[in-house]
Length: 337
Ligand SMILES: [Zn+2]
Ligand SMILES: [Zn+2]
Image (cartoon, rainbow, N blue to C red):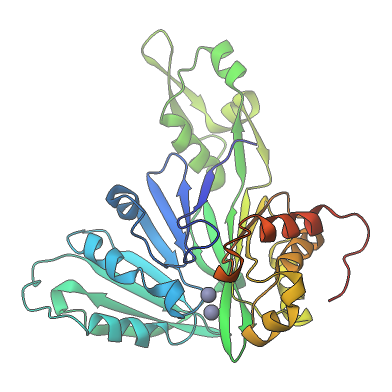
């Protein structure tokens, strides 16, 4: 399957958590957690459309100021999603600056906080000095904190000591693969029209809907959507990336993680401590590398990416990655512990 999501850890496995996911062909990106963002280029930051925060520990949220600094002159709204209390916390962060000369600035921050069965949403506009406005209750159908025709982001609340930490699944609605050979055979010229074509398939639009197709020899043809689907495309299950961090090593969390990450193409998951330090992992409310690998295996994930390594393993930089991979690739039933 050709990737539509291009994920990368902004700060590597030992740095602050932040998973940057570029959305192919869209010039947009999503961010899961907002630790230190200085290694992102300004143009990468400005591609961000929505930010998903697991919880408000400082290593997961300290990049907010840099984000705001770059977005201040933008006329595109920025959406931030996170656990209960996020509206208060961002309001306080915003109140930490002086905003007397921003009346003409168009930036709008939309902040949504998780709640079951209902969460809350509030608006902060630069033009109003980032005062809290339009706070309303909001529901998240099927747990989706963001839903577009092309993808959605579902949240699940995990326990991280005595606070919640949200885990997220980014799911493409439907994967539309294009047969390059068929394009060539029909003389259709590849280009941006294919992105629009895929959007129509996912809506889904009527199969009679005409689509303008540029031709290799110049000019264009008009074909019904259904005919194009049958001749140049095939449909498969959408891509799925799951982000899990800062979860206590409990069986209750494990079951939620396995359900959220079922058949994911990639599970990005914290591996903070080594199995040898499981007691410490329990008191600090983090997963071990071995647990991370076992969860990926139980979920049937295709790939595993581990991060949030404790600095105590810095002199053995491969250790946690290897431990997680070993548990991920082990045969037989996942062990206890
Ligand atoms: Zn953390
Ligand atoms: Zn934490």
